[in-house]
Image 1 (cartoon, helix red, strand yellow):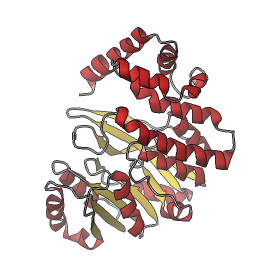
Image 2 (cartoon, one colour):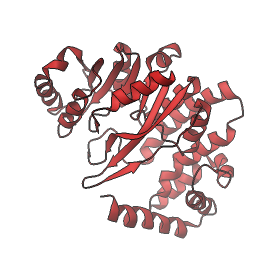
Image 3 (cartoon, helix red, strand yellow):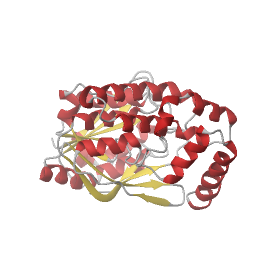
Image 4 (cartoon, one colour):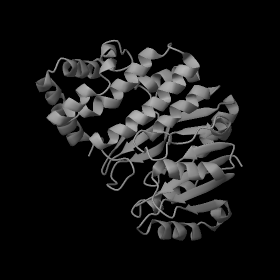
Length: 325
């Protein structure tokens, strides 16, 4: 088996058909599809079964696993990983969809370059428009890891094809019970990866129109989950690299709390101040991100909240409001 596709399913009855059809239409044939019903209370699984009947050529390649109770996205991914038999693993969120040649292109690149992980560009899909999200190219797993820690490369699992053995040989699973920031697990995989490769083409459509999505807006209640996952990554990085990536660890903490500055709430600003204050010394040393983001964080460190609010207004309310809705 070349590729195992793992798809958690929860409250996606309006999206699952498009997702499933895009997967069943893949040009790569040697694939297994593992759908994990995370106790979805709607008609998602019924719609999925209808799609399967309409694609009988794929039926023998499909598994539907069921959670008796909702366990969350990380646990659903782990359930799929436990039974995955493919040489490589691909994660797809059930409210997203993919281009028909995505798996073939990623798999061919992985085999040609003997890569443990291959990543690609993706689309940020709004209700009436899409934005092409170009990803950076790095030649080594360490370079890519530094970029993910510092915030210039996304650590999403769904635009990456990862060798199954990388999970199993290193005992890597997703942090059950800590859904916010669970994608940071990808950093653990890069810690252990050998050869990696980048494919400069967008295949994945990340949909931002599902109000029931596992990934919701950042808020205070997510902070414990984020900090738990950061601690896991920080320990793994220190174990393998010592203090060599301390700058990047500091930048990761700054990026983790940056969403609190994309608010007009004083309580969010106070939360920014109290979260990872030791990382503030890296603000202006973070050469990985734009000067704009550095300046916003510098303003926050100096409590220049009027300027922070102005930035939020310009970016969230005006730029995204006008162009990406």
